[in-house]
Image (tube, rainbow, N blue to C red; front, side):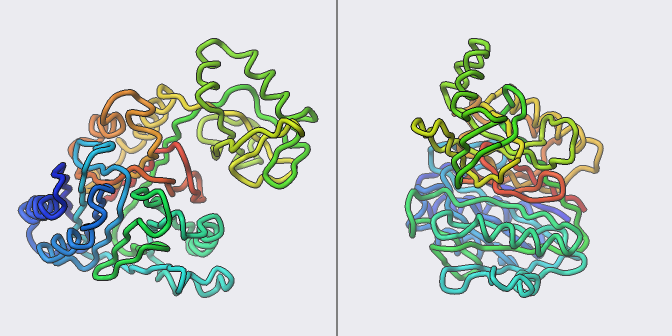
Amino acid sequence: MRSSAAISEHLDTRTAAIEVAGLLDSALEGQVDLVLVYGSFHHRESFEEAVADIKRTLNPSVIIGVTVESAVGCDLELEGVAGLSALAMQLPGVTLTPWTTTPNKPVPISKPERIPEWIGLQEDTKAVFFFADPFSTPITRLLPALVNAAGATNEIPIIGGMASGASQKGFNRLILNDELITGGGIGLTMSGDVHIDCIVSQGCRPIGEPLVITNIKDNVILELGGKPALDVLKELAQSLSPEERQMVKEGVLLGGVIDEQKRHFGRGDFLVRSILGLDHKRKGIAAGEFYRLGKTVQFHVRDAQTAVEDLQLLLDTQELEDQPFAGLLVTCNGRGKKLFFEEDCDLTIIRERIGEVPIAGFFAAGEIGPIGNESFLHGHTSCLTLFRS
């Protein structure tokens, strides 16, 4: 199995596509099975033609294109500037089953028994990749349905991310072979003789102590540990160090414990969500998720140092494995320079640890990847998928 990655900073879309296609074509001989293409919003209007150019040059069995806020590839994270990146793979012995879900023909969430056939699950399926438009995809209902379907077949991970190349419905572009969709999503079920690892590095660290939700109305947490939730947050802020208080001013997040059976909670045990607002009248906190009564949660802050440490720790285990032949990096559009205040931070760390593996990807409006045995929609994370023979 082999792969190649390429990226172009050229502002003209067709020129960028020809450049990327030429680099990939010169690096790979023989049949190309899969090409993933990510184009920044600068390339949106001609993105369909760009993907067609790459398709004509490489003639892959499957090609998928997604418009994004910023493209990632090789050694570059092209934040806020024109970027077109692609990852081409030769996958002998691997079955690729592409599928779509659109507003007119959605995945049958209400009939879960049909989902495995719809997405092409097999006994030797290794992963399901999914890229979707956030404005038209009911991801909070669809992803659990996909997870349940895949969980019935050896807990297969769902991996991918939300298109980030537009700020309103109808402007993202998603392409599967010769089909263009502006709503819904594109999936790819990968089965056969390939090994896939996905690590999810969160860019947040917990503050305070875990607390139990003792009163909640819809998504508004009214009490934590028997006290008004807003009072708990204010008391916590007053007890923090000056450095931590500054982090709180920049935004507080809330993490829900993934496995309540654990006696102690640490790094990687929380699924972090944004706090949407404060309800001063009821002294409540509006969470970015509908938690149940009795759920254990903990406040978090975004922290560059923790993000680096977390990624380094996760890469420790990957260094014990064989060298991957390809990598897919889907990172939050709130990371990069916004978090680290320097360019290419995630990619630089990955390069230092796993070497010159062809990598492409994008900054997403939500990342999809597994923590433990279940896949979730994340924010503030960096999801790295490594492919091995």
